[in-house]
Image 1: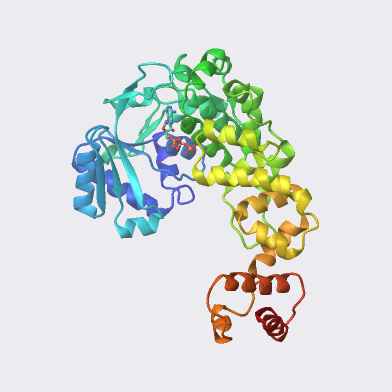
Image 2: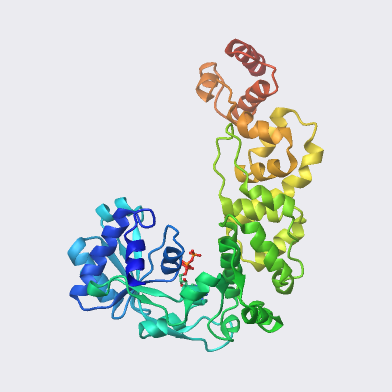
Length: 421
Ligand code: ATP
């Protein structure tokens, strides 16, 4: 097994060579300090699945701050220590940062966690790697691979995570797991649907009204974080449907919007080539999810899930714009443009995906770029003193372009003369 894991860890398709160099630098330093050092969680899971790895979760059986300080001394960069949890962020020196395309790395001290009450954040104490693996969510995430010295490539798998990976099973580590932290329900479904795995029957059985009651006590921010992670996934629709079937949303809040499969499937659509916009995938997910909901429900949900101000503004603007679409139908391009300009582009794009309203596409592709050629300086040069009239004349010139009333600079100048007079 060890040989196999070493082969996977040296595979440049799974870990790019630059990341491997970073890992051997870390491993070398840990070995010189006699400090056992591991990669844990998603790294081990994904590498055993033969998938390229992204996150490097480094933990040491010792003091991560002291370890971080020694890395800074040897390789450079900066350290932000968190003394309370004995963790540190290593802001990588430029050479590493550029080659691994990541600015920093978390260094964690192995620890155990105690939940003083269901759903509360855990109390943390430094401990052994064995304890650290026991605090984790699922067996497939409770494996570590050792990095330092001759131990390089040793797999620690006290809970048979590798066997569960092979059987495609998501299994919690103890019966109180979902009660301790009901956000694990979301995590379980995320892995289940991401990898096409199955929840172990006894794990599934424990997603019940008892842990739903605890879920209801969690802060909006914690739940929203889980929904954000789901919207970031390619299979977000399947995940939401599964959570909905399990009753998670309903129990959490009976006003939670229903999952509209047709709309949410649009999250994976690729913007047409003529759309020069990049839309945040997570934001788009929320917009499509909430499309059918009236403003009051969006407002209530925004409060319950503690939406960020950007998310709250965008979802409310979408709810409002949706209501405006029919009354705006016969608007001229200029009226559409002046109306749409106040709304985030991602909202307009989401609404276009659903409604196919041609004016929304025209706005994104063309209208928003149309500007009058004259400027405030031109008005001044014609003897008009700066003031409120500027704010009337320039939009009128722009509207004339948008509505096809002028087609050339000469036309615009003629109109300008008339407007000034
Ligand atoms: P992903 O590919 O989804 O990012 P990951 O395993 O890297 O997967 P993280 O959220 O980065 O996921 O968490 C890293 C590790 O921390 C997990 O693999 C798991 O061992 C542990 N972990 C994260 N969240 C929890 C939780 N709520 N309860 C217990 N362990 C957790």
